[in-house]
Length: 141
Image (cartoon, rainbow, N blue to C red):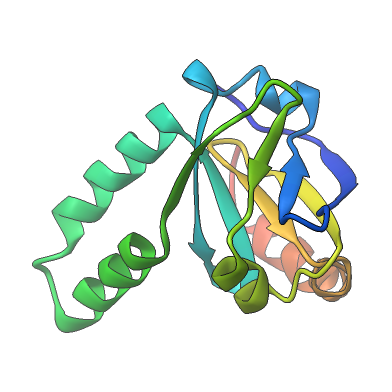
């Protein structure tokens, strides 16, 4: 499974988002899990991807008070939904408010999951490209 690409969409008045068709192909059984995510966006996981992430969280939860808080935050904000026949999912109000998403949304692939961004927050992230270039210099792919 690989979530890649960038797609500009809108949230309708009922809080639904059309999942880009290329990303829909990565969803096993049409199930998604949305959760709060660092950097001020929403993570979108396939059902299988969430199970793998959940397993990683379970191994971390006993390691420290901070780890338990992280696990609790991800678990408490998690919302499971099925993609409907029109390719839509519901994006709950609590996640939209937390991420600053109103109507416009940018869906960005992040390999093992996708991220839903408010356009202005994603643009701020791009301003950090120089920092990313410095970080990548020390890595080998």
